[in-house]
Image (cartoon, rainbow, N blue to C red; front, side, top):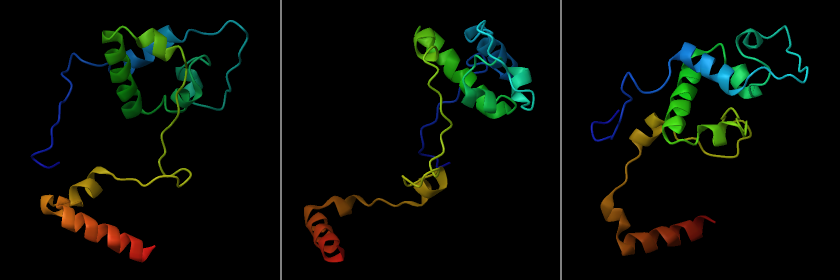
Length: 136
């Protein structure tokens, strides 16, 4: 990471570890009593009840995403909005290349981009507009 990049890391008392997150998820989404059945062929079903949203159950056996979720739950709890947001059960696994709808800029790509301040000069800006029009 570049030295001029601002980074705030969590302290060890902030966020939940894997086991704490799993226990919190079981508390937030208790076993449903409407007879919802869990599939036996999934490892995650043994970890979390069926009342937990599917995308979370799909990642339940992976430590890093669950710890990231635990940090988010911890943060939302500090703001007293955890119950409002988590009860919506609106979770999706983010996959930017899933449908090819967007351009992906990861950290390495962003570090290779070079933005020059003189480029923002109005004459250069107009030249860029002219070039774009020629290409189209």
